[in-house]
Amino acid sequence: MLNTSLNKSLRMMFALLALIMCIGIVMPTAHAADEQSSKQQTATTSDADLWRAVKAGESGYSTDKALEANVLINKAGNQGKEIRNTYIKPAIVVAIFGIFGAFLFFYLVNGPAKLAHGFSGKMMERWSKADIKLHWVMAITCFILMFTGVFIMLGRHFIEPYVSEGLWAGIIAASKFSHDWAGPVFIVSWLICMIKWMPLQTFKMYDLKWFLVVGGYINFGPFKGKHPDSGFANAGEKMWFWTLAIFGLFISISGLILVLPLLDLPREASIATLLIHGVCAAILIGFTIVHIWMATVLSEGGMESMISGYCDENWAIQHHNLWYDELKANNAIKYQD
Image 1 (cartoon, rainbow, N blue to C red):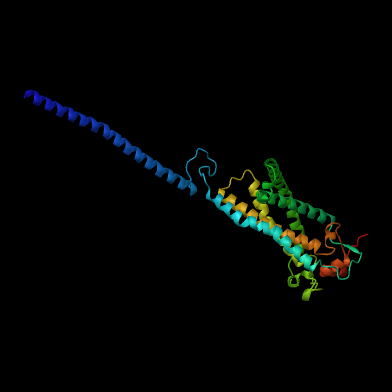
Image 2 (image 1 turned 135 degrees about the vertical axis):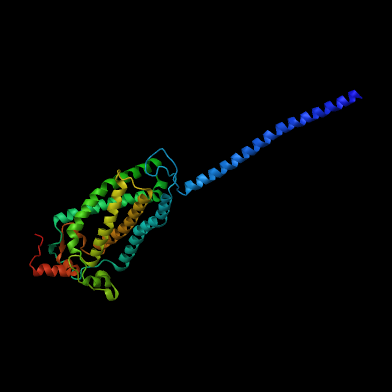
């Protein structure tokens, strides 16, 4: 009887001990699992918040003390890239191919504006040698800037897919180098031209008629043979001058800001400057194409004055009659020897 009671007590003690051991094993494991799950959830939440803040352009902490070094992703950069790709790049394409194509079509349909009385054979001075040199310095640097700018902006779409990686790298490097060094030369020549030629570019009431009859360039319909009054510069030339003056100023300032190494601008300011530069480039490219067409192909005898400095007397009478009459009245016409 005693042995039976003892055995029963021992079995209960062993059962109780086993139960305590199981509880001791299970509880820490469950606690550890809960703790690990909690840590994972916290880490997941923290990572999500972190990257959400990064994408939003929020600033953090960085040992680098440079401007905006504590911002991993700048929203202004992405927004500026989207504006450039959506609006500015297509505008440049339209300025190049659209305007060129429109004037080519006009030329094929209309032809050039011929001199009503042909060439007289008498050449009179229109530009000084200094003016011609100044014009071509500005024009050549302007062409370099436009071509290299187009390569930099659009080259990855029209050139890079068709050339080797090394050649493309060389094209971009050469374009960047030429663009940076042609810029200051253009700015200096542009500034001198603006100051020197501005007195001749004041709009007059008779310039309105020039626009109404499209400058006398139309060879058919009611506009045929209509040659509006013009002074030294006609209304179209004045419009080109002031376009170059205004947007040339903005593109020059923005260009200097972009290349000067000592300017440490906020990202938003840099992106805004880059976009202004691109918009001005698109406008100037378009107006340059118009200027070239109207001064060369569409105007018989027009190009000669910017090569030799002299124009045919009949060309002056037809396209710049008020200027010619003023010179003749003052006995100031200088004929070529």
